Image (cartoon, rainbow, N blue to C red):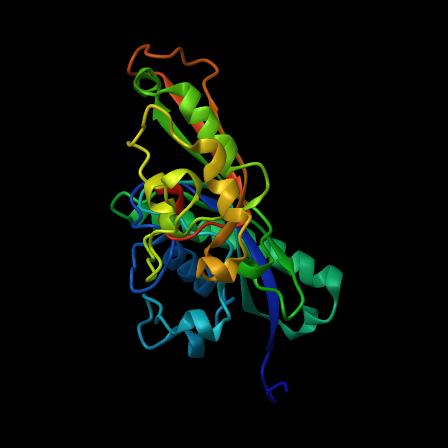
Length: 287
C-alpha cells in the first residue's frame, strides 16, 4: 500500500555493474565499509535511490540492515583484489512517483541515475586510499519476485597464472581431471568446499574418496580418474548421505595457453577459465 504524501514509489530493478577490485576487501558488504558493495550502496544513496529511513543513522556509512530493507541480492561475489567484468544485483529503489507507472519514463529515469552513480563512483575514487574503479553499466526494471542470486543461471571466472607454472604440471593428468569435473553433468563437490559436513570422505570406486580428489598435489602413478566421479554419480544422493546443496554443475574448465609458451619468461601469463551454474564457498580455489 502506498504511503500518503510520499513523492516516491519502490520498484524492483537489476543493477549491472563492473569493477576493478584493487584496494577493496572483496565485494560482499557485511560489516566492511571498504567493500565493493558498500561503495555501490553509497552511490545509490547519493543519487536518491535508497531512502534515508532505510539507510541508518550514520549519514556516510550504510547500516548492515539496509541490505534486507532494500531486498538486496547479488548474483556473484568476489574475494579481495578480484575484478569483475559484470555482476548483477537486484534491489528495490526509490523512483519518482510520476514515472513509476510509465515504462518508457522509468527506463529513462534509471538510465539517468546510472550516470549519477558513475559520477559518485568517480568522486569516491578521488577521495579513497587506493580503491579501484567501479562502473554502473545499466539498471533494468524487474518484477517484484526477481532475485539476482537465485535467477542467475551461470557464472564464469578467469584466473591469470604465470606460464612458468605449466612446466610443473602433468598436463595429461590435468586435462583428464578437467574433463571429469566439467562437461555439464552434475557432480558432488562436497569436499571441494570449506563448509564441511559430518560426511567428509565419500567412498568411491577404485579405493579413492572425494576427499582424496580434493587434494590436487597428490598424483599417484595410476590414479583411478576414470572410475571416481562417475561411480559416485551412479549412486542416489541420499545413499551418499550428502545434501543436494553439495551438488554443482561445472560447464567448462579450460586452460588457455595461447601466447604463453610453457616454461617461458616470468612475465607471460596463461588463463584458466571455469564456468558453471553456481559455486560453493572455496570451491573454485580447491579445484
